[in-house]
Length: 167
Image (cartoon, rainbow, N blue to C red):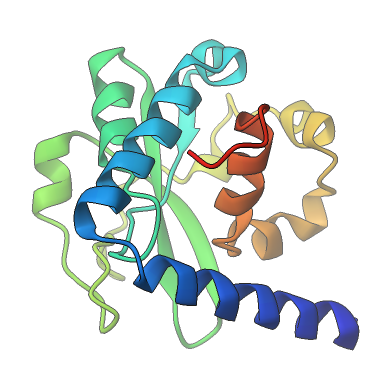
């Protein structure tokens, strides 16, 4: 496990270095490519409930995904992190306008307020399907850990980029 953690840290450091070298225009261009590929992916198309993070400057910009979710009538869920416990809930975002009203964390990330109890939680919804986790090969007891890892996007990009060429 220590070797895995060290490997993850090394990969994070290298990705952060490479992303820092990109211009804002290049980050936008590559983010748009990733978003377009995701939006056309059959798994995305078939899902009615989408969980997505609200991106930071050095991450894949996810706003186009969120816009598409609402445009096509899907339900959107975003993370709310509890920094004191590293716990994360995926809570329903009601609209693009709703996103503009969210408070920012100390890390400058938009998320629902801690005292906001009005939002549906994705994992407690009746329509949530555990079989989707099984198809992804993620045991339910590991979901919180996996969902908290932002490098899931790096894995997604690998899956979407079949040619092996950079975006």
